[in-house]
View 1 (cartoon, rainbow, N blue to C red):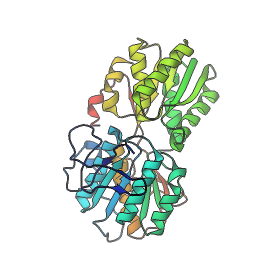
View 2: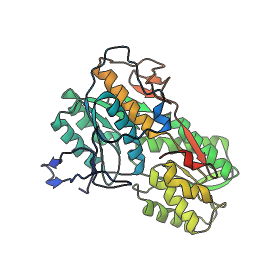
View 3: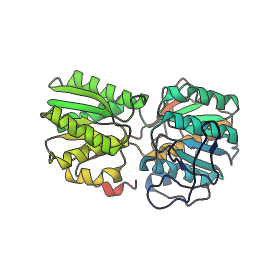
Length: 365
């Protein structure tokens, strides 16, 4: 197993796989070896400073321990961790984030197994594959551990799942932007971080369905080429698409690396203004490509808000909430009036769009 970011002062020992993970101190920027605990400095950003006190209506039991397992070690999840650590500092919790070095579901399973052994109170999960973690999450729940999830609206073994918006709405938003950039005609392709990611598949499926119904002069020529969350691989895939489809006018990606790789390919080939690229990534990562026009739009939500919302859900479940009601207010921007399905799948309204030429500096992540 490759090094995984570890946000705790312990060493994970995975005896079953005879592999080890080292932990280190968090430094500015990205690192595969990181140590952060609830006592670490918590950044205060505009989007998480307001409305961050959740009112569950009951006396709360504070000070829980929580391990949050995310997809992969990328800056997007550093931002999610800011929301986690803000909640931890406010409520006296110990919350640690674990990020595999590659988007590997088996690594997530191994981390969850270790968290079960540690007897944490809560496990948070942003899965690469919901199916791959179902069994181990059932084991966690059988042990009395609360499970909360994000980007996992199809996950069965969760006590509560929080989404920033519906997959359909996000996919349609992507297509509306891409269609406008392409003048609603011509060839386009889609690329995807992981074919096992249900949310990312749903975004692209909704986008293509919207195109077929509303933009008949657009044509999908290549669907869902997998990038494995690797910018260089995404760039190579896009450059190959340009060779195979010389009239290509648009590329739509899902994960953080997809649209950055597309932007690099467009920039290197001098195709700004000729090929549009949309996808989901961090504003800071996309800034130079939005500024020079090699990326036309990024769609996103603030992961810090989602991280904080996961903690609110965890606390409310520990306080006895077994079913959430329509209009649930989690006390954080974008999640003040959630729609609810089956009592545990909550959807907020935290969708953002940043377009070429916009001032990206106002987004602190």
